[in-house]
Length: 313
Image (tube, rainbow, N blue to C red):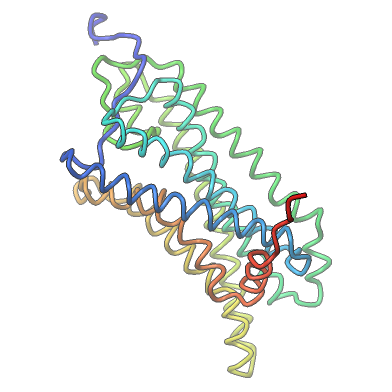
């Protein structure tokens, strides 16, 4: 590309959710409501687990981490969307775009690892019930969570450092409503082969390893369930996995729709809807899916919400 077509880009223009300005107020109210419900629901889950000693178990430890990650994940994109809808502006500074990309891949990948960890817990409980407390020790659970935090931060750091080295063309209008790797690479005037190779390698490692762990865990779980003679025992064991299976199906279903759909079959509107489902709707649904059918969680939430507020002196 000719040198005159290259420039130092100070900001990008994000895709708007609707081309009609009259819809912006309605969309602002809708996404603000969804964001507030997401933050409230996930923070209540975390507070309920912390405040109730009966929930200090591996399953709820992983769930509290998932709720925190979902709250942060939603906060990487929704506040900027709300600000742009309110101000009628589409601009995002280059530094903010990189920070949003870093946080998006950090929390998005951590979400998939936590879903894998939450598959390991019922696997150990159903397949190795007598060794459950030994295997799922606090040290083991801490390593399961701490390791992916380090790996996902490394992944985001590598992507961000490589992105900083690229040169971007003038008129940088992102074909997305938030900053993501592939839309940014499409705007680059530089050679992006190294970036694409790193994305492919990390995508394989970070995408396949949690999914493989989930599939192997549930394969062993279902094999163990078939050996249970009573129908009541099978249903009780399966009911412990139902919420996780629902969340996992929604999470990976939308990811496959956004990233694995053939270009010939994809459309801007469908991809936008699937991306909104993954980044906005699922973090809001998770607290409901994990609490509505969970007696212990409902009891902890009632206990938390019924606590008297300390009186002022």
